[in-house]
Image 1 (tube, rainbow, N blue to C red):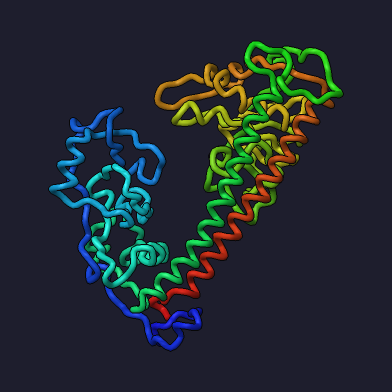
Image 2 (image 1 turned 90 degrees about the vertical axis):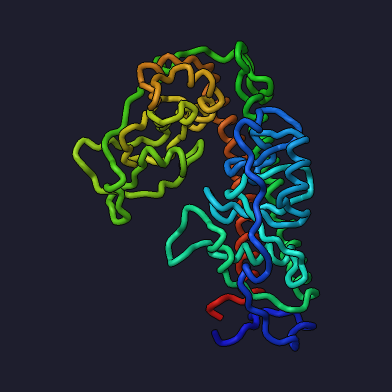
Length: 406
């Protein structure tokens, strides 16, 4: 290491010398709450009990009594307001600043550093943690043991005013990111509400909100009467190849990569025997999943000649695909009634053909699809602003902190 001075430093602290190097075990002890037994929890109760799967979420799925909470809080380790809780299993290194509200946390899976702030402020330590690479010996670990945490080397300025100023700067960025993220979420909620009003509610033949140039009832049809429904073919993950001749969609990507409309395809493959290729406006749905809810997904593909893998249903129809894909998603509960299976769930073409939908004229379909597409573009643009802010924060942190390779 050349020196222990960050690349970017506030002018009033530039003559304060190098930062201090310590291991987390030198700062304080690794602590955890007293173990809660299963028979001490319930689905409803007075004090939320956060296990690893609900850690960081707004609501717990288990509760303990106030009597146990007060007893354990008094007799055993319990975080102080401002302490930084760390996930030690599952998603390693997830951070939650304890807000002081009554809550209890699963032992061993959720831990914290007992820090009295005599050496380093918790608000500063929070950002140090965000820079920590929670790995050991070059391999990602499935559990973060206390010894792993104690050995982690950190660097910080001795002057607490400098710690506070760095933390305040990054907190201002966090506030911007949070505000922008909330804006994106509000837009998504608005879109969800608008979709429900632009399509007919259950038992209705016209939507609640309608563009003034359109009138008359929508026509009821079975999907099988207006569409050809068939499956893609083949295409294992091993066949995906960036040098391939054809764009392609693997069925797993419908869950992870694509939304209601696909304008750009991310993978390629080489053509194989009996491969199935798309026509622009095709609607794609997964045909199998380990949970039934995953099968109520639909994506309109705006590109032709894309190879479509097996376990994907292709709906080929004369109506607007981006109107239909959104409509199918809205009809989630009706789609799920068509799903069969126990351990692995399936949606078959013959069953999907039975789905009843109401259809307006093509111009009205297009108007609805265009309106929602405009909202999608706005949401995408605002989401990119979040990513830009996060990227800026990451770059700034690299400048404001000292790393081991300095």
